[in-house]
Length: 220
Figure 1 (cartoon, helix red, strand yellow):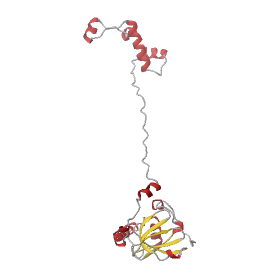
Figure 2 (cartoon, rainbow, N blue to C red):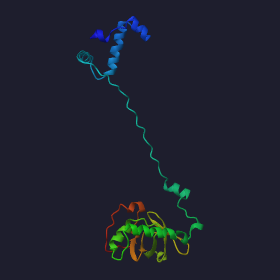
Figure 3 (tube, one colour):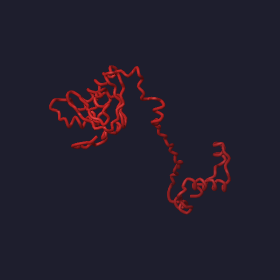
Figure 4 (cartoon, rainbow, N blue to C red):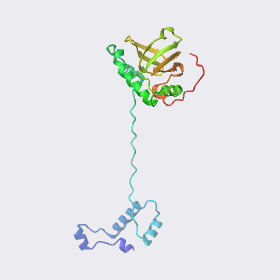
């Protein structure tokens, strides 16, 4: 077996291959080192036994590639958004007529959401849908408030945050109404829904996953 593995090149083979045949000891040392690298999990005795019984298929070991951690793009902080004035509405754009098309889109969105607002539609179903719907573009009114100056304000909802509504009135005045201690109404196709702002202090994206419980009376 050793004579087969460690067979030296003849002069003709060496001349044809353009190599210089190494000595027997050097060739044997090279083969042993090569087998040791190729079968790192085997002991020398097990390696010799394995070579005497059958042919060996040498495995190719690759180094595990390091996974590069992808950095998630961080959004802007609230302070950065304020500095950039991303949600600032310019005075020349604070016109009620400019947002009437937005209101028409919102009405169509609610009709599609409620599968058509028919006269026999259950008000409870509409109320549940509106609580989770996007209200940008809706006409909302303040019906109750601990601050009397807010009562009666009606307009198209332009912006909603966790704690406030920004409304543009028919007089082209931008109003900032806090949700806390206020009750709002939303009317569409004759259906009126009530929103208790104290229980509505959520971002519009968070409302879609929240379960609202029906309560008999809710204090301001």
